[in-house]
Length: 390
Length: 134
Image (cartoon, rainbow over all chains, first blue to last red; front, top):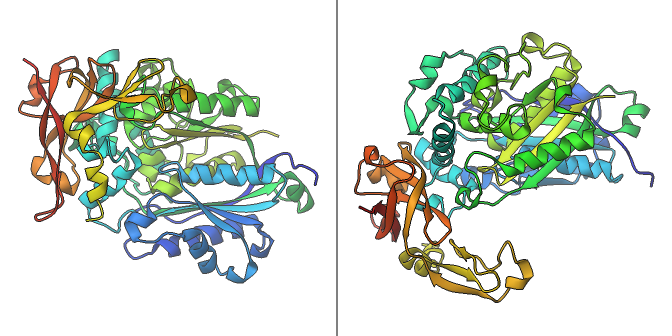
C-alpha cells in the first residue's frame, strides 16, 4: 500500500459547552459527531474508524466502553466501524486526534472520525473535586489533600515569588478568554470580566481564585480527518495537520525540576514545529491549555512566545484577537469551557474554523497557522499540533 | 472497603517515610519506586528501603478552600511541596500553624497524623504531615 502523506481536517461539529443538565453523555456526543459528518459531507459508512477522547466517564457516569456506546448511538452499529476510546486525562481529546492522525499517516486508514466528550455536571461540586483529582498521583498527591487547583496554585505561588509578579499576570489570561468567548456561541460563558473581578473573585486554592480556574463543563466536539488521497478524490476542502508532537514528564509535580515549566510542553511544541517546518513567527494564533490561568502563563513561556518569567510583557497587550499573537480565540478552557476529554478536540474545531475563515466575530485576520496545546494532569503529558499550510 | 489493601501496602512509606536508595548511583527517592530514572536497568534489584529524615523546607504552598469530601472538616488547609534534606521533594499538608507564618523557604519537619476518613464509619487513613521546625 502506498503511504499517505498529509492528513486534513475536512469537517467539525460541537455541542454547546456548559451545564447541560437535561442532556446525556451519549446525546451530546452523537450531536457533535453528526454535525461533523454533515459539515464534511461524508457518509458514515465510509468511515474507517472512530477514536473517542474521554477522561472520566467511568468515575462520573459509571460508564466505560464508551467507544462502542457512541458508535451504536450514532446509528452505525451495523456499519462495522472500529471505535476505540483514548485516555490521557485532560489531554484525552488531543490524544485521540493524535492516534487518528497516525492511523491515516500509517496508510492504514483514509477517513477517521475523532470525538471528544465529557459530562462534568452529573455530580455535586465537592465530589467532582475528588474525582477530578484522579488526574493527579492519587497515592502521593491527592491522598494528602492535593487537588488540580491546589497543584496549580503551588506553581502559581512559586512563579509569583521567583519573578516578582502579581496575580494580574494570570488574571489577564482569564479576562482575554472571556472576551473571546463572548463571541463564541458554543462557549460555556458569554460574559466579559474585568481584571478587578478576576483578581478579587472567591479563593479556591490561594493564590488562585475562581476566575483563575476553568469551569466544569459538559460538552462534546468532533472532527473528521481524511488522507490527502481522499481529499483529492472527493474534492474536499480542508485544513492540514502540519505537525504534531507529544511528550512526557514526571507524573507528580513534586518530582519535577521546575514548578512553573512543563518540560513536556517545551519538547512537544519543539517537535510539532519541527515536523511542520514552521517557526513561532509563522503562527497566527494559539489555543493553549489554561485549565488554570497560571498554566496559560506557563504555556506562553514553555512554547516560546515569551521568555521565562516574561509573560507579563505579553499578556496585557499582545494576546487579543488583533494582538501580536492571539491566544485562545475560542475562549479557551476558562471561558469556552473545560469538558476534560472534549476540550482537546474542541481546539481543533476552533483551529479549523479560524483557518477556513469561518470564525465569525472572533475571526483572527489572515489566520494561516494555528498552534494547539493540550496538557494532561499537571503536565505529565503535553500534546501540540500545528494546523495550516499548503 | 475495596481500598483497604491499597492503603495497607503503603503504611511503611506513609507512617515512617520509607523511600528508596538506588544501589547503583546512591540517589534517594520518595515516594518509593522500583527503577532509578537515572540508572535504568542497572538499578533493577538494587533499590534499597531507606527512612527519610522528614526534615526539609517549603518549596511552595497553597491554602486550599475548595476541598474533596474526605477533607471537609480540615477546610481550609495548607498544602505544600517540601524539599527534604535527604534530597527528594514531596507533597503534604502543613499543620499547627497559621498561613501567615509560612513562606517559601520555611523549615519544616514531618509528624504522624490522621490524613482523612472514609465518611463517618469508614476507614481512617494516617500518614505524614509537616509542622514548622522552630
